[in-house]
Image 1: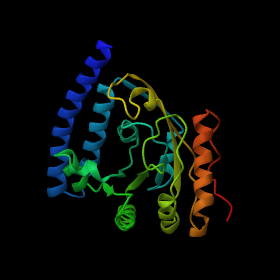
Image 2: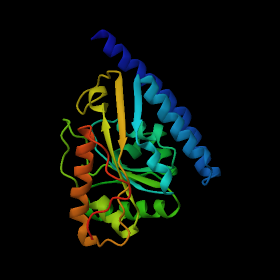
Image 3: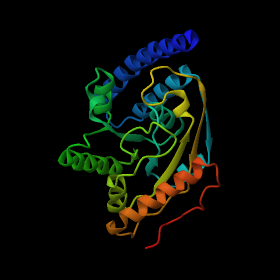
Image 4: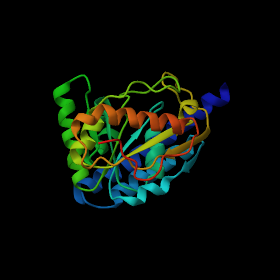
Length: 249
């Protein structure tokens, strides 16, 4: 127990240091060179350092699918705060997340999120949630990929919570391919409700893109069900679905 708590304190101190250094770097770049690729490189390096400090060993499966299109909406299961840095650490495309509003009030960290185009969302307020998805659409238009956790919160078990429809409406309106991602291992590293960090392996499995171009927004529920089934299959370790998969139109 002492070893676990010591590790947790060590990770917390390093994560704070990395956040201050890279948060200020991102803030400076966003204010002076808002289109600079160094913003995304700084974010990715921050994520890699935080993941490394926690003793997480990331492996990926089928990550090469990310090279087939300039931008995506990435849908993933969500069990831990480490889901975000793990994705940021391995995905080379510019990524922006829809993140809960409370993160944006954290000094330096929240300011950097806001300045670099991350999107706050208050899901309890429908009007502001709609505006958040409008902002996500604007990030897609400038070439960013968007990550959404459709469970709208961390699951406390390996079983996914119900999917909400906002991310799928966004994909259908934009005609952007969706990539499902199954995240395994972060639940054991830092589950919801626990403060102690346990180092361990994490695997990110990337499914083949689901094409949404030409689909109707009326198919949002069908699309959500398809994505959930794909992630469940990948979590069980089954083979990924073939390239260019699309739900029936």
